[in-house]
Image (cartoon, rainbow, N blue to C red; front, side, top):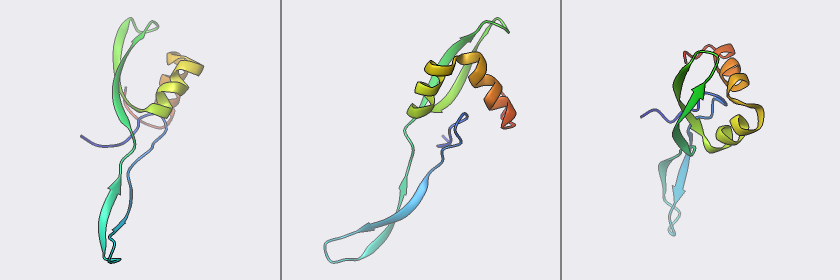
Length: 78
């Protein structure tokens, strides 16, 4: 599964784990990605989106129609 948010574009960040002896090993900071299904009344169908938890709150605030419009403006297929 790709850890990318369709609405905000959040993607993994990369960095290092640092041990007690200060040895560094690579690590990955993944966003909190969830799959969420919404009813899209204008198209009469459900859409399944891959969203970060921040984006889920954004959808709750602006509505699913506006959120889908933003996703399509980014060039992501819904």
